[in-house]
Amino acid sequence: MIEPPSGSHVAANTVTPGCCAPVIDSALSDAEAAQLAGALTLLAHPIRLRLLAILARHGGHVCVCDLEAALPVKQPTVSHHLRLLRDGGLIEGERRGQWIYYAVRREALATVRGVLEEFWARMAD
Amino acid sequence: MIEPPSGSHVAANTVTPGCCAPVIDSALSDAEAAQLAGALTLLAHPIRLRLLAILARHGGHVCVCDLEAALPVKQPTVSHHLRLLRDGGLIEGERRGQWIYYAVRREALATVRGVLEEFWARMAD
DNA sequence: ACGGTATATTGAAGACTGTCAATATATTGG
DNA sequence: CCAATATATTGACAGTCTTCAATATACCGT
Image (cartoon, rainbow over all chains, first blue to last red; front, side):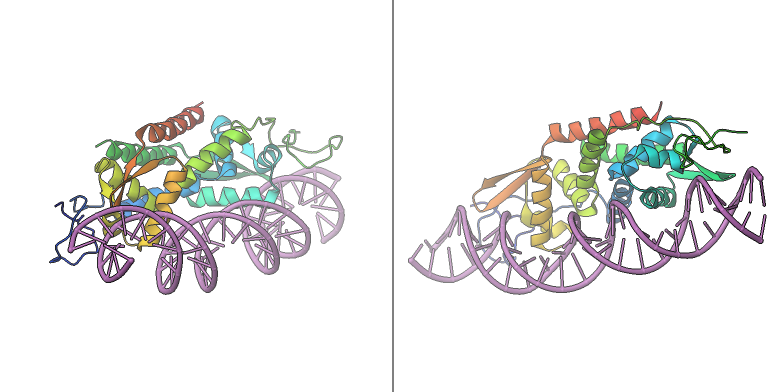
């Protein structure tokens, strides 16, 4: 007879068949998972990905009207996503006269990338 | 006098000041952005990240009751997230008797990682 | 076949997200 | 100051996501 899995609903003193054994340490803490999920959530939108790609490619010299022209959404939507990215620390904006120029914060991107790399590494165990 | 940005709302024949010039090629196609955003959306949840981490660490020998025991959500919620991950091709399940054992599909994970790497690379231009 | 255990599915409720029109705020040139 | 342009914010609406209790389905041992 095989043992029940440790997560089994069978009462501890019950004699039953079973499937496996591991008492699972959840391998990624609550806080780590939340942090990574937050970073991924910020990236996980096509408009935001395209904003980042455009800003990265045109280092520091793109105003909102150009972004609006390059993307299939209206100006308030562009501003909305820019705000999310800025609140998340991934970009920054600088006013120059009438216009506001956005740029990627490369060190923040590198941090996100690093957290992700650590995740992949942990998956390789 | 400086030129208006290409995305400016100023009528083409209007004489105005301006900010910049780039006619923006959106740097990441609609389809590429959608694909990457989809993959990231699947990853972007703490429970799903922890499920993947647990499955990766216990290669191929974890049943749902163990997952439920290791995570702060109820069984239907675990099943729901497992379903999303399976529909996305990231994991697979095999029934063995009473239990269903899940495992990570490492080649699918590698694909996601590859798409992400390509994104980071494109950000480095 | 039956009772018990494992997992999936359904359906409902609430929270969250993305989009845009309308509006507000800031800046500039005249 | 005024008119025009750039960007942000507000508020509303629709759609999606997350969770869970209840229920359905599958398998096992007796």
